[in-house]
Amino acid sequence: MEKLVKKSFLKLATVFLLIVLLEMANYSAMIFL
Image 1 (tube, rainbow, N blue to C red):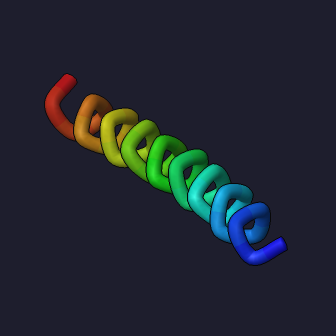
Image 2: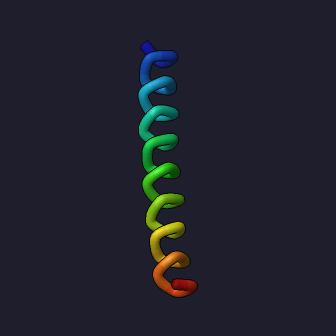
Image 3: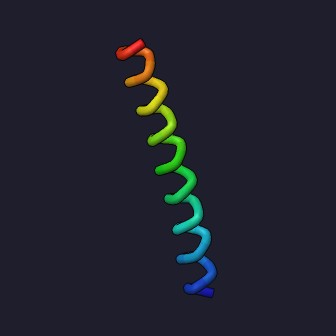
């Protein structure tokens, strides 16, 4: 049970990080272009 929670939490954190990185990339692209 605990392992399952940890796994889904890691998955959520990974998705969140990816979204944040994409947002930052879009933001810096708007600044530079």
